[in-house]
Length: 207
Image (cartoon, rainbow, N blue to C red):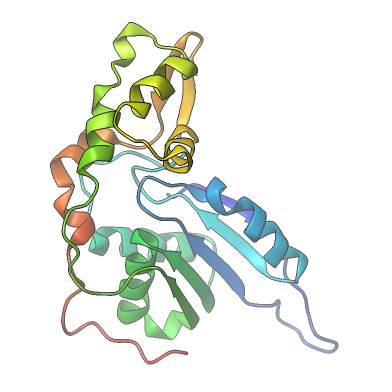
């Protein structure tokens, strides 16, 4: 089951018996739910029941050799079933946006509103090669410090903001041993999956 961080409990209008609809937020490639914590907290304060998800092979969710939009959309469905979420609003960014679009196309009856940020359903060519060079240059068997990891990344990734984004996925696997939370080994093999278009017959008429 996908890991999630849940913010708020939703609100009820006077005389209304059911809770406000939940809002699922899905991060982009190499990201995680924590990237959306500030915005999620703001939405929760506005009365939404916010579910910040970690997709498979990201954040604190499970690692798997299977990685595609179809299976990530299925993961979101399984999460909704396990949490009894029957009618949702869903916001997806980048890779999460494609996942959200496919989910809405496959399960339109479960979606009230769909919000897609920074991506379309079309094919995108690979554009993460330099980032992957930097990530793969980090040899964790040498037990580098956080500063040493950033120094290695800086030789490949010149943008400070991008490096800080990637460094958020760095964690202490055990005392003295850092690792990335995302499943770099699987991404190395399945990088083409990120740019694949959604099926041509996938459609959704929700607002």
